[in-house]
Length: 347
Image (cartoon, rainbow, N blue to C red; front, side):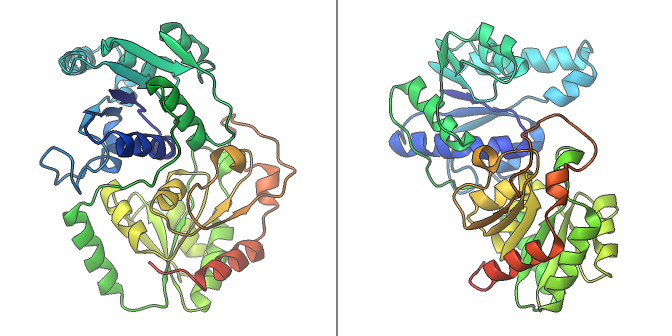
């Protein structure tokens, strides 16, 4: 069978417990997954030699669909060649079943072009036109997207599935590199990772507040790292400046972020990929929610403190300014929740 869940990071992670449940029930099944190249390390380590194992524990094969790049140049020779190559690759597998766990037009098109005997998706997909391509539509009832994934996948195979523990790839190179970088920083009472970014502005708590939390935690003896794509990451450096230089920018790629998250005592973030990565790795989290509903998108399967004041309106519009309810969360609330979890957390 084939899973189509191209992105984004948090959505890929939210789909994994359902696939892990299916894998546990049917270890002999061949399961493939179509994903954006940037999220490949969530499914397969760079050091993987192919086949299931520590470097690729969940699926048997990963197929890359660079849809973000295709969208930029939809009619270029390179894009058309990539799409044709993916189509040949998928069709050569002769899939019995394909489940679109994304619900977008592009994911449904990829599911259709895979040529599986059955294509299954939600009866109310994110983009309504995607439903036109499904042979079977599934209605879900659960509140959380992780449980909805189990309903969808379970209905597709005719079995009851419940969220299972996820194993993420172990990339030995990234693990060694991360361990060496942390060792060079010296000892601390524990590591806290702040991930200040968000998919859009309405979900992003202010950098100066993250910095104030970092200052409070370093004052309590913890080392605070700030997730960044590069050493020049503007948002991460704003957090460090607001902390009075007490926090440290920790640039890493996706494989290194997985290795780092395994080692931290706590992650503080909004509704964003690193938060859901921490939950998948069963690391404690302090989650800051505004326009998105934690009952649907909150951290799943880990110890957490979810901060949301309740007056927020569920709103997935890509607004630039932080949502008013998110701004009601104070520095003292976040620092207090973090210190409470840190008392019992071990990496």
